[in-house]
Amino acid sequence: YDARPEQLEGLVSDIRTILAERKDISQDFVEANFTTYGAYSLDIQIIYFTADPDFRKHLKTREEINYAIMRAVQA
Image (tube, one colour):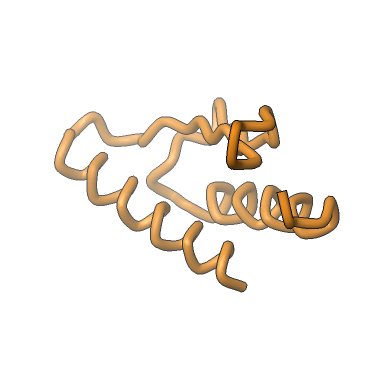
């Protein structure tokens, strides 16, 4: 709740960019939106599908994206 609207808008934009730049993500349906005021958080819903059905590759891709999002939050 301490975040300014501009900060949250910037973060959502950064997440969308992270996802758009990934070749291992199906670009047919990618969403990142500020959706909810949680009890102690401002919630961003992120939806994407990995292009490769291999579950290990999916997990690796998800991990890489999560680290990229963490870096965006810190920035």
